[in-house]
Length: 101
Image 1 (cartoon, rainbow, N blue to C red):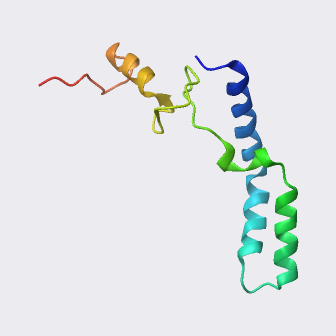
Image 2: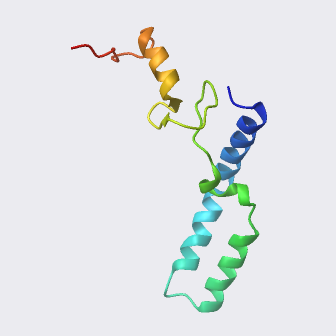
């Protein structure tokens, strides 16, 4: 089990990224638009830099929803490989069975 503080910090980052996503995308579009003047593009970059760092989607760490484990996380389930195996073994994931040959 991961530290509670790191799990909560990641949740905070995820919420902040959702909150600022629209504004961030808008400023990025202005900054990368070649038809705009260099002053407008520079101003957009400066506004983008003033946004909170934790509002960037890059700062979010994929963690297991059950245990908080940061490594070996399946994106589809948002769970670690260990948690997926435990749930699959007990039959709690529909359609997933342990392979045997």
